Image 1 (cartoon, rainbow, N blue to C red):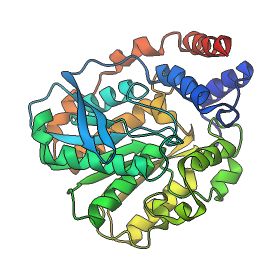
Image 2 (image 1 turned 180 degrees about the vertical axis):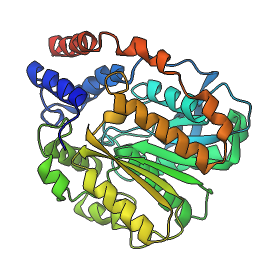
Image 3 (image 1 turned 120 degrees about the vertical axis):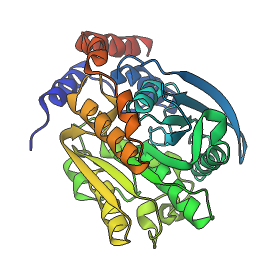
Image 4 (image 1 turned 90 degrees about the vertical axis):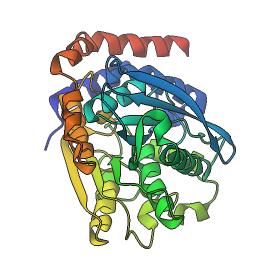
Length: 345
């Protein structure tokens, strides 16, 4: 298929602004760039409560932000791990996304601010993600959650970490995880699939940027074969929780996400796979620009509700009208963001 017209318009605007690729920037500049782009998620939705927590981790406290929707509890809990190549992103870059997830699914969303590379290389992010998930499962009642209904999820590198947490929980005897949400996950460091070659340049995430992320994250060549870094390398995927895997047609990571889903299915794990035609990597976080991003949010919410048999959560789905203000003037707002970044360099 061809690029979705809304995606094409976005890419045309990015091209016209001649912005540098992330892999040509310093780590700090890359982080500033992604922070500026967080407005593409749309206006933050109100939720019933937002609680900033500090939970114990392997190297000190881990910041966790819990978003609770207007629902009677105890509610399912989605431990959410943000994307950004293990190098960029934080609680703020995914604030609007987590709010929308909480409202749409009727779940408490616990967003984890795990340690980033290159300051903290593998396995720091994975161990933080696992420690935070274990704490949430053991203390779900403190955030209005049901300890018997815990899911893990994330986008891109966060999808990688969600898959890894599910593996760790199985291998380490808990916590019990009922569902894994893997949004265009990075599952292998080889970066040698057909989709990596076909979509190497021109579709927002480039192959060289993905390699830049992996090189910052991993400490050695031996790490590339570690299943807790590259879950596609795990020799055995039996006994893992049911999964929803989202991929995008014009994404370098498309094939490795779908390959992981195929291996889960072959291991007897219930899996739903949805490829979004015409989309690029990162589209799920672009609800202010893309209709398919809002469709994907609805489908993710429905899958979470079904996984935990909580149909009452459907009433929390955001109304279409609430998204309209975020879509107005999106081109001007994006240009302002990019102009601001360029003038600061």
